[in-house]
Amino acid sequence: MLCGLLLIALAVVIDVQATPVLPAQFTTSFDLRIYGSNLGPGWMQFSKDLKGMYTNNTQVVQYLNQSLVFEQVYTETAIYVSFNDVCRPVEGTFYDIFGWLVGASFVGNETINDRRCQLWKLDTSHTNFSVCIDAASRPVRYRIDLDHYPNDQIYDFGLDFAAASVVDKSLFVPAQDCLHAAPTCHDRTDNATEALLAYIFHPENTTGDIGNQDVADELGDTVFICSDVLDNHTDFDSYALVSLYNLTVVTNWAQYQQCNEYPGVCLGYGGPGVGREASYGVYPNAGQCSNNTEVGNWYSLPKQGHCQQGDTMGLAYNCTWIIEERIKTIDATCLLKQHGMEASCRAERMVPFTATRAILRKAFESDDVTQGGCPNVVPHV
Image (cartoon, rainbow, N blue to C red; front, top):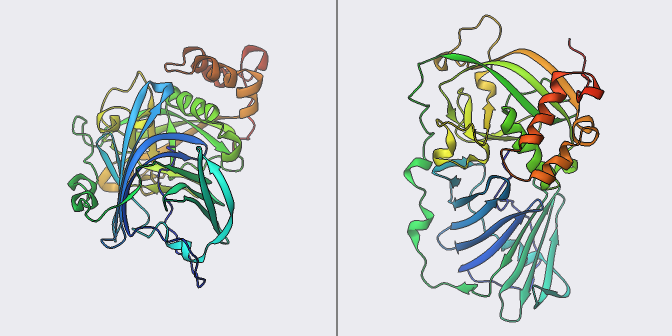
């Protein structure tokens, strides 16, 4: 659910020598946008010699009136992303972010952020790279365009970009809590279960496919749907349906995993436990074990923990969640347009999204459009 924050590590086969050469070690401030969202100001330290990169950035989540501070550590063996005291490994390793320049082509001169610069580009089958470099050999804007989620990443570098003869090596060492999964919540009886009404906003032809996907309670999904609307992501995500499930889950909550795409791919240490966090992880430890009623809950459903009817539920049995019933699947157009949830998101723009949440609830309470309901559009089998 959470939008991605990483420079994409891609190997590019190149054999053409190009002119631009940037320092092997540098530090710089930057402003980051990914997938059209402003992820705020940040700072970067890079060393090709030490094969390490460190970045941090601060994202203001306006609809939650909270800020998230992200840190990313790129090493030769893994990439670690942390925010609000939660650290996860993600796919990839350190790479030379400007190594592709050796094969780049000069495109022309541009003015970006009132800075005159030369634009260089390299297009590959799945990724297009570009960087605009000023007369002082400082990158002004670095852009990566992908053919999959997230589709673009834009770094606007500051005037403080500078070669570094010495870097802080400690920044290239992940914190100890990055090297293992957070423990499950200790304030829960082992293998206790409870019913969970779980919503998911999803593309067509994926109904029932909730393994390795993220779901939410009513307020959590209101926050997610509104954030997707306010960030203008819904069309690109191809979200067309909203489904409501009645689940039984083991409540020894694990660390939440960020799951995207179909089939689902999750970021984190894995394991069978149902992951839990406050919407956008805005509370300490991302709200894994806390009361998150003011902002809603997000849950991750690992395939490893999916139960079949009759299975014994528990972490030790790799059985932590089961679908008791898909209550209903509705067309997102009915919800967002016909009943005005999109307009309500834009009007309220802030949790608790009282009026907006009521629109979501009514859509599932009735099939009668005149009463705020939306009909089921996917037959039960």
